[in-house]
Length: 451
Image 1: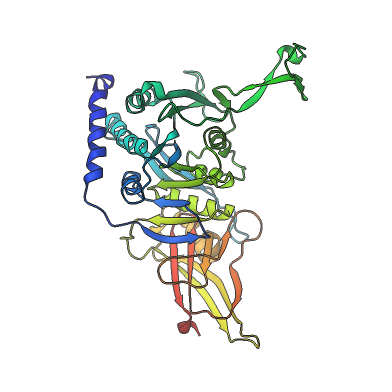
Image 2 (image 1 turned 60 degrees about the vertical axis):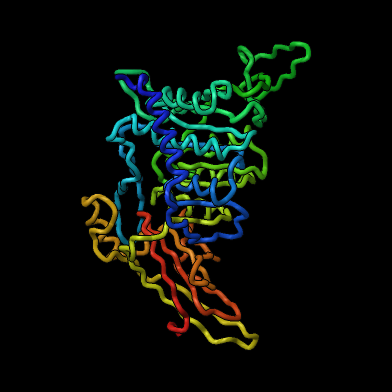
C-alpha cells in the first residue's frame, strides 16, 4: 500500500496521539532555571514540544491566544546535521574547523512515523492558535506535498492561504537534475478572520523605462524605473552567510529577514508568536526586535544553548525553562577565583571574579569525533579558556533561579574573563559557563566560604 493510501491512517494515528497526550499522566513540571532581565512573557524552553504545548493549554490558559505559529521542523532529509565549531588561539596555531553532531533527520522508522509525529502536533497547535491567527510551516521537496494534504484536513482547505517559495542561491548542484534552490512555506489561517497586512515590493518596468500611465505612480533607482506592487509569493532572500553577524553555527539556520517578513505580514506589536521547533531562536530573535511576545521551544541541547546565547547577546529579556536535570554532574570543570574586599567608608563591598582555567574530567567526554581529540587536548593544556563560548554571573543568587546580571559572549572584539562589582552586601553568587560544544558548567558559590 502506498503512502497516499495510508494518509487516512496517519491522520487517525496523529489524532489518537494528540488525544492521548491530553489525558496522559502529568510529568515533572518544567523548571524555571534562568531569568534574563524582566521577560514580560517571553519564554525559551528546552523540552519535548508536545508535552510543553499540553502544559500551555492545560496549565497556562493559552488556548486560542497565539497570533502566529511558525515551524521549521526536520525535513525528512535523511541527513545527520552537524555544527561547525571554530576556535581561535594566539597560543595554539592552525586549529581546524571542528565538526559536532547537531541532530538526526534520518527517521529510520520511516516517513509514516514522521508524518504522524507532525500530525499530532498540528492538532495541538490549532488549539493554541487564535481565531485571527496564522500558521506557517517551512519544508522542502521531501514531504511538503504530503503535509499539505494533512493540513488541508486539519485546518480546512478553505483556510489554506498561500504556498510561498523561498528562493536562495546557496546549496549544492548536480549534473543529474536542476539545482534545488528553494524551500516551501505553507500558510494557513484558523478562520476566515485572519489578520493580514499586505507588504509591497518593487516591480521594474520593461527595459527599466518609464511607462507614464495616467494615475500610476512610478519611481526610479540605480537600475531604472519601477512601480510598487503587492508582494508576490516568491521571496528571493539570501541564506545566512558564513560571515553574517546573525550566524550561530547551528545546522539549518534560517535568515531573520525571512521570518521578519512573516511577522510584518501576519502580526502586530504585542502579539504572541511561537516556534515549537525553535532551533537556534531565529523567530524569537526577530520577534523580540519587532516587539512581539515570543515562545520558543526545542528539545535539543545544542539548539537551546545557541538560542540562549543569541537572545541574551541581543539584549532580549526572557525566562528559560527546562525539564528537571536527571543527568547529575556534568563532564566539565572550571577554576574560578573569587575575592571579596571589606566594606569601604561608605559601606560598599567589592567582589572580583575571574575565570582562570577550563577542563574536562575525561578527554573522551568532549562531544565530538575522536579525530579531533588531540587538538582539543592541546587547547586544554595550553589555552583552555578559548573553549569557553559565553558565561554569565548572578551576584545575588537565591539558590533557585539563576538571574544573570552580566553576560559575556565570544563574538567579535575582546572577551572578558573577569569582572568586578560593588554593592552593600554579597552572600552568594552563581556562575554559568557554556563551552563551544554546548556543555554547561554551573557554579554556586557561598561567599562565606570564600572569605
